[in-house]
Amino acid sequence: MRWNWQQPDWPNFAYEAKRLRSREDQFLKGAGVLVGVMAHLDADDRQNLSIELMAQDAVDSSAIEGEILDRASVQSSLAKHLGIKADHRRANAAEAGAAELMANLFRSYGEPISDTMLFHWHALLMNGRRDLADIGRYRTHADPMQIVSGALHEPKVHFEAPPSQAVPTEMKAFISWFNDSRPDGPSQVSALARAGIAHLWFESIHPFEDGNGRLGRAIAEKALAQGLDVPAITAFAETVQRHRKDYYSQLQRASLSNDIDEWLGWFSDIVLAAQQRTLDRAHFLLTKTKLLDRLRGQINARQEKALLRMFAEGPDGFKGGLSAANYRTITDAAPATATRDLAELVELGGLRKEGELKHTRYYLNLGE
Image 1 (cartoon, helix red, strand yellow):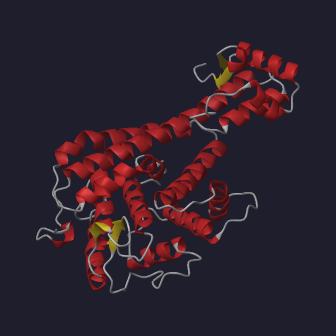
Image 2: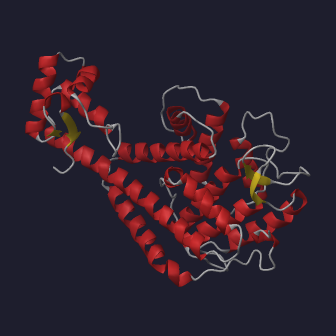
Image 3: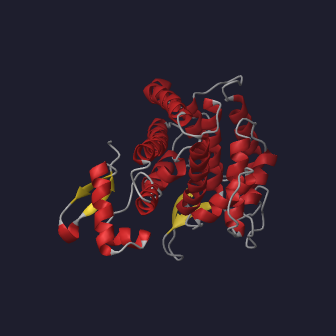
């Protein structure tokens, strides 16, 4: 089998730009809508949403590779790196490194990529690791860099990257293309196409001993941010995580040829879904503000606490809805008080009620 990097047209990726045009237009339009919605949020909500999205991105990008990070710890560490007051939650080495990478990506999105930048990112991601020979530099091992699955005695090779000795030359070509293809560069490439090519190209080289997936997604987000000339805070890794199996399947298929229309179409749809999820979260915060403003002076402290706890669950809300028992746990209210409080919230339009008796559940009334 010949991998993409072994073929004579490497790395001249071929695709039809016109097939992406509608998606590119939708991406730019969605970015404009998101800017507009964010402008209607107060400063605290904007800041909190940005921190929340970046922390979730770091957690999900690690989860794609099977590494579990604590979101609250990453969020606290990220806030500190951005100079924002945060709690004193202690982050482990991996969480602190992932948070610092996201902060660096946020602050330096417009800067060109370099070996030095990538080495720094890799050192951050591998913070605390003692099992790797090459940290903060490209891999040097003589063994083939392979992505495999299955039993040790009969592994299935999904991809084999260029040998280590070829990595510096391959990365020099990649970095040159990435910097030249930016919006103000001499060889401009549209935002979605550039991000999709950058991610695939980087993953095909697989230049580091570990962490290539997370760094490749960070590079894609950097490309998207440069395409918009604003930090691209989206639920990109979260959306990839939701489609993890398909993501690996698409990457594996794309590694067999340098004709990448299918890959770019799939990748663009993931970016658009991530952008929509981010927009949904921004709308959700805006709705929260409007609802609480409308109910101010009409609800008691218990009811406000319960509503805030429900909003803290995000747009997807409590799985299965809020029960009276949940309400009592959140507020320490007596059963009769909980029943009265919930009925008032329904009457005021803060909650909507579904079901009867023990099957009664309550949901935020976001349509009001």
